[in-house]
Length: 272
Image 1: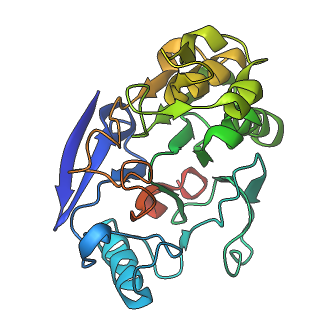
Image 2 (image 1 turned 45 degrees about the vertical axis):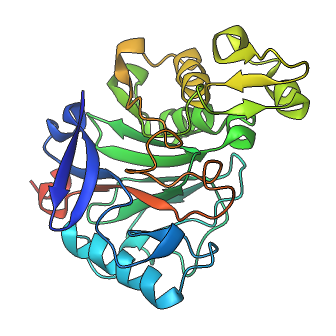
């Protein structure tokens, strides 16, 4: 189950299943609670949107304050619509600038992983036993290239995560009600298992309605994660522009909301 919550002025969507774990902080932030105006109103964190840099930094500071993220510990990506994953392991320095990737994984408490979206799919991964977290950005290209499956395989291979211990939580994204795609997208998806469940022909020839959240759910399930461990928010960003930014509905003029997940520093099992 998902519910709208608030910290200060910031409204966000939370998964009750993740909140019940007790050792992490997470939020699929809405567009509400920031300082930006116009098409970027109000909690815009997208640095390539046309919004003022000062306002974006103010919004990021508001997020860090609201969710107790230590200074300099919010890690964002230069999202490139691929399947590259960056590991933030050990006690070394965090990356300077924005790493070019679409997935982040860490077992370090006090480090927040951030994904910026405005129709693409944000996905959190949590190993409930080993206390490892991941955050992924899945647009249609990243979905077709297998970013969600790569996250599961990296958790299994590098952190010995058991698939039955993983929770995968899919946040707000553009829904099949609003996401019409063309032949190149169809071709990219055509060899994926269960394609008939997330691609549906339109009345017009050569067009399909795509369900990105479902495509990623099926991809994660194919890796062996139990279906009951894959949760989906079910909000369409294009339908709910009152809550979320939508690049497609905004015709290219839209901000980006932020989605964050962080292991709490005080709950580090290694220090228990």
